[in-house]
Length: 255
Image (cartoon, one colour):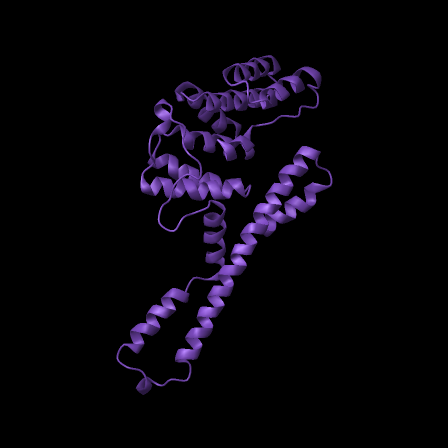
C-alpha cells in the first residue's frame, strides 16, 4: 500500500485531468482499506488485552484442566502477524468479501458461454484478484487471476479480467492472446467490444495504426455505448505521434 501511495504522489502533479480522477479513485480505495486495517488492529489489541487480563500472573495451579487448551485456542486466534493481516484484509475488504460466500461483486451477464459458474476455489481466487485489481495492484491481481484461470480455463469472465490486467502490466503478448480468445468466444456485446478495443490499443502501441483504427471501429459497431473506442480512434487519426489510449479497464467495475 505504501508503494502504491508513493507512486500516486509521484505521478499526480504531471497527470492529465482524466488520470487525476483515476488516481483520486485509487486514493479513496486505499483510504477505505487503511480504515479497515485500523479497525481490525483495534479488535486485535482488544482481544490481546482481554487475554492478558484473564491469564497473566496465573500459575499452573491456578488454572483448571481446560486452561491450557483455552490458552492454546486464544493463542491460535491471536497468532496472525500484522503483515499477514495486511495482505488478507487489503484483498478481501477491497473485493467486498462476504462472511460465508465467495462470489463476483457484480452479476454475470446472461449470455451463452459467459454464464458458466465458477467452482468455489476458483471463485475465491477470482474475488481476491478483483480486490487487488481495484487497488491498482496489478501484479498481485495477475497472480490470483492466473490461479482462477487454471481452475476454470473456459471462463470468459476470468479471461477478460486477466487480459486487462496484462494490459496494465504492459505484457502485450499475453493480453493479445487473451483478448483474441475473448472476442472469438464471448456472446456478450460489451465484453466483445472491450476485447476489440484492447486489441486496437495493442496494435496502436505497436504503431500498426491502420489496423488499430479498424479494431476501434469494430468495437464501436459491436457496442456503441462504449465510447472509449471512439476516443482511441480519434487519437490515432488526429495525434498519431502522441497517442492517448483508453484501455477500457474502468468498465470492469460496472459490468
